[in-house]
Image 1 (tube, rainbow, N blue to C red):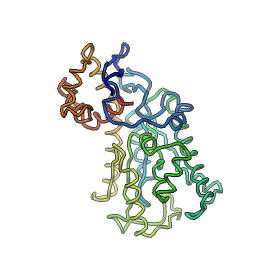
Image 2: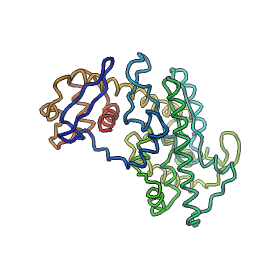
Image 3: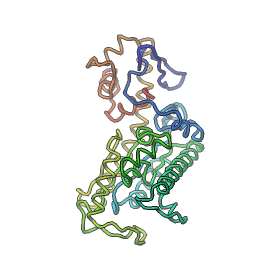
Image 4: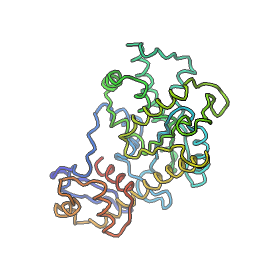
Length: 337
């Protein structure tokens, strides 16, 4: 926050509490490009981005602002268990009282509709194909989010692959040109999701289970185990900057163990988002009339002029509410907008 700015953080019940003179010194989230941000503003109601300008409501008490839609990118290498994970997550989340939406894999929609991939040497034709893919992916994500918001119910939207997956299939110079043409940044694309859940291909650590068939028994994969491992590694690298990047490997005793770890990561994120909102309300109440430069300095334990997640976690804990580092990271992103 700059010293001259002001920020409001949500409070449960009556109104908002302003924390003056803290400006943009909580967190270091870079500013979004205006055109990229407007893409979401125009169609997503108040759910412009997952943690910006969207006051979350506690699904148990119904208090707070608009109900928050949790958005998850489900990614990974070939034959990693995405289809089985989605069925497992559907069952779990419905039992916990959440509506569940699955946004389909966009390249598959295009291919099934007759679109042909131009190949890596496709030049301008390739660029047009990838631009169309990104635009359709954006629209699909917005559509599912908008419908989820309209219900007024706590919801989770799971994307069958996210926008950063595209980077794994392109040379760096083409990827950068693609972002420039669409007025997007990697920070904007990464920030659309509350969780990036990477399922490691069976070709990494569970080789005997690697198959070219999908769960439905349809043979659509063409990657050898070596190619699958290379693609998995690229995909993981593309998402490595996401602040909540969970990698689920094949080190467990069984595939059921892998599914359980997937479920745990999702529930931790969903619960952390609600807890972060409660922490914001709690902190607002504690700082009522006390959000001064001296208070900021007390939170800024290393004296570098910024409050990071660990410092905010310590501050909230000192006031009497225990929060995890993940919850504090979400709270920092909320405050830094």
